[in-house]
Length: 216
Image 1 (cartoon, rainbow, N blue to C red):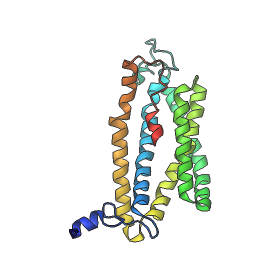
Image 2: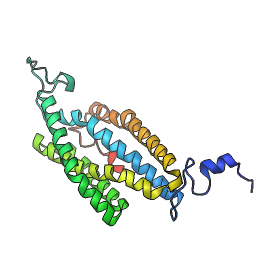
Image 3: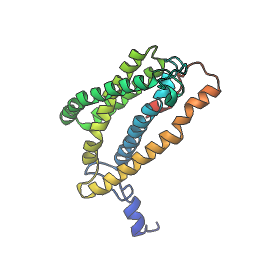
């Protein structure tokens, strides 16, 4: 067997991912799963905010051109600014209230279980969001997503400590940052094109807009 060069061993040696070694008792698969978790978390965060105007478009009346100008920046929807602000406000309040609970639960049962639970909640919220028949129910589903988002945000840093060897914590943080960047780019360049594709296909409403993100 041909001997690997020292540089290749450092980058992709036994259990190593991009120079980062997994914690004792873990494997490369565990480290890759953590990197994917970070990537999927950022995809969820970016996508849910960017897709909100597409959902509101089916719940709010079109702007009639009054002097408020509230719908100009949201695709001609009347009251879209107030609606978006209200939804985001309640979502952030939900995150502030639930993050300490998720943190305490993570210390008790482990960050992996809390992280998986967060993805399950986020996926369920993504499924329900396009079907919300009214603005209050849309706000409720967004708060439901915020519960999962609080779980995901809480466990990103704790899972890093559990997954990466202590001597490689700095490189592990850098690897997580790269995964976050790729997640944001993927959400912006790929997933954000879905609404226009669905509309061009003349699909009624938008139940399929958020389906791909559920794979995370």
